[in-house]
Picture 1 (cartoon, helix red, strand yellow):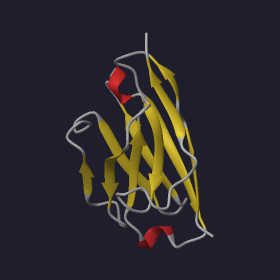
Picture 2: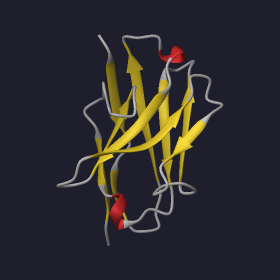
Picture 3: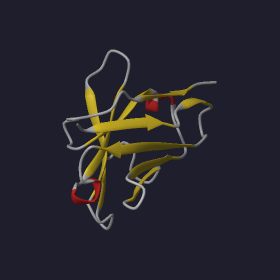
Picture 4: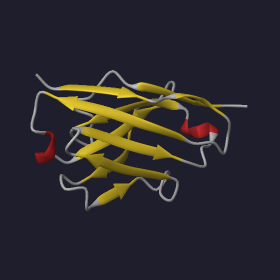
Amino acid sequence: EVQLVESGGGLVQPGGSLRLSCAASGFNFSNYYMNWVRQAPGKGLEWVSEISSSGYWKYYADSVKGRFTISRDNAKNTLYLQLTSLKTEDTAMYYCARDRSGNPRGQGTQVTVST
């Protein structure tokens, strides 16, 4: 059974930083591209970033390019997302997922950017 468990969210002021983690189990993590997606209140799911199975290739949505960094540690079966220069519009539930449409995904971790 695929399990994805996100952590690291919280309340942060605009301009702040957070590091999200996603612990994966139930599948061969190192064989898969992995993604982060997010859902803001009242909005649909938005793809944020993708990383290749080796970690060499990384892709970002224009809305986060230059501010967020995706990475992975295949030895630890863990995916990361470093969020910097956060804006209020980054407020959302963040999920790690196996594909860009968010399937399958974990239970999410809440990121709130507010003064």
